[in-house]
Length: 126
Length: 171
Figure: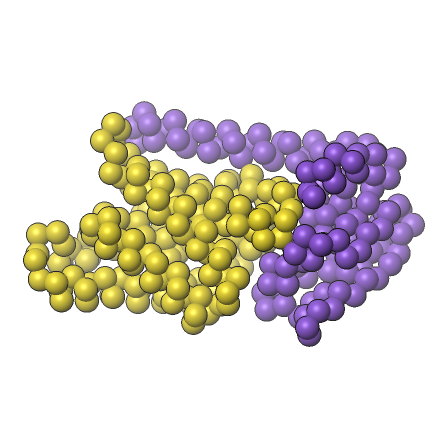
């Protein structure tokens, strides 16, 4: 381990900490309301405002591909899916700002945005 | 490797590396369990072959090994999307590792090279995913993937130095 090995290692750790902190703080912010947006290959297919009383099920179906998205008391998870890796089903439940669940095989993305900044997000995403 | 001029020998050796990479990718599917905290995170075992190839082969030969591996693994185990995701990671990781090995300004430890390779693989894959899925929020996985790249890259670096030692016997 020479000088440059250490510099590179610390840079990686530093970037990881900064990144983790950024997303942690974004999630910790207090917001009046949050919104769940479901996209399929970038195209918005479902959105709903999340409150503590939101209970809802949305089934995504496309050419035999299926993801059952369930919201229980404002907490979002994928209950069941036909994808091969099941990563989205095993993903932890999400409810904080900027948390996501991704189903790579189906090209499906669930994102939670704070309700008071939708214009900013729309301009970035679209 | 570079000292032998026997073309067939070199080709067979490259084929052996590609075959090893495919086997490692299959083995990897059985043991992806430990990283449940970061969805989809993997050990990156096939990177053992990329790192080894970069040290024992010429740049061009190592590139052929990586491209063959990505294509064959996608054909055998995955799909078109596998090809795009792992291709994005593998290409970025190969280019950066090759640069770091060939540059003369600073000498880096093979384990550092391997860790940087793991980091670049993650960055490449997440960038491809962000483009295909049109969401930048997928970047939120990156910090955790970077943390994990250090232990997995370390493991891969150590493994490839063992592999190098044993391959030296047949070169």
